[in-house]
Length: 413
Ligand SMILES: Cc1ncc(COP(=O)(O)O)c(C=O)c1O
Image (cartoon, rainbow, N blue to C red; front, side, top):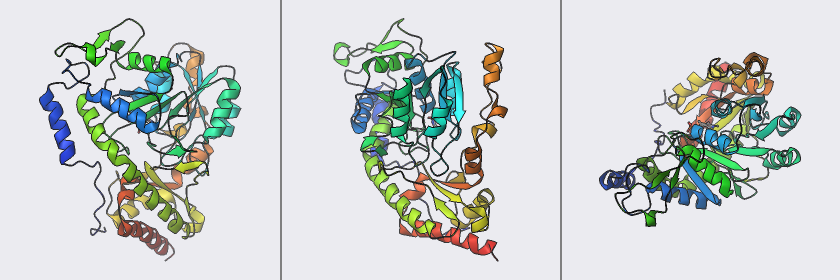
C-alpha cells in the first residue's frame, strides 16, 4: 500500500459550511414545510441560484436524484402503457423511476467509448408506444445530444436528461440537463455537487415547473414569501395533482448554497487533470481513455474511467482493482468497477407485486431477455476512479500513471 499519498477529502467543508448549517439551526426553520421566518427559505435561494448557474428558467429541488427522476416522469404524465428508452449501463435509478410510474423501460445498449446511450440503438427501439428518452450523461462523458434531440423531434418524444453525474458539463456551450424537456441532478454524497443527499430537476417550461413542485411537495404550492407573515406556513395545500413528499431540507439547501460557488473551480481542476491523465494513460499500451465528443465544450467528471484492453495490457480490468487500491492507498469509494449492466444487475429486479398489473406488462420487464453486449464488456473491461482523485495535484496524477505501469510490468514478469 502506498501510504505516502493522501487523497483529497470529499466532500469539502470549512468554517463557511459550518456557519451556514449553524445559521439554519438557529433560525428555527429547518424545512420548507416549517413556519416562515420572514425571508426566502434556503431552498428557494438555492433553487434560484442553481437555475441561474445552469442558464435555465426553473429549478425544483428534491430530496434525491431518484426523486427528481420520478417527479420528472410524473410531470410529463407518463405511466402505464408508455415506453421510455433508457441506457443499459447506468446506476439503476433511471430504470427504477420508469418502473415506479408503471411505464415500461426499454433498455438499450451504450456506446463502447463513452458508455452513454447509443442514439442509433435508441432509434431502433422506438415503437408506437415510445413516449420519452432518458439519456444518462455517465461518469464524465456526455450523450450525443444532437442525435437524441433530433430523434425526439422526429418521433415527438419527451427527453428527460439525467445529469446526476454532470453538473456543469456543456454540450456546445449549453449545460448538461438543460437541453431536454426536464433535466435532473443528484446531490448525493459522492456527486460533484453534494449535500449528502439531495437532488433537483430543471426545466424551461412553466407548466412542468409547476407540476414538478406539486409532485415533489405533496401537491402543495409555495406562497410568495412577501405575502406570508413570520410564523405562518409557506406551503399551501391543493388538490391539483398527485404528489408525495420529496422535499429538500433547509440544512441541505444551505450546504448546497455553500458548495455551488466552489464548483466552477473544482470542475476546472477535474477537467485539467483528466485531460492530462487521458494523454499519459494513452501512452501505456492497452489502456484506453474515454472518448470526448467534439461538441463537449466543458466536461466535469463524476468518475474517471479507464478502459483496459486485456490481451494488450496483459491483465483483465476487474481483477486489477484490488491491486490498484493497494498501490494507491485507495478504498472502494475512490476506486471501483463500472456499473453492472442492467442485464446482470442485482439492483434491477422488477418487483412482481408492484408490477403485477397484467401478465404482458410483467413479461415485458424480463431482465433475462436483455441483450447488452457493450454494457457487459464495459463493466468487465474498465476501472473507475471517484472524481475527488481528480482534485489532487501533479504527484497524485503521476501516482495513478505509475500504478498502471507497475501493474503492467508485474503481469508481464
Ligand atoms: C445516473 C444516475 N441517475 C440518478 C441517480 C440517483 O441519484 P440519488 O442517489 O440522489 O437518488 C444516480 C445516483 O447515483 C445516478 O448515478
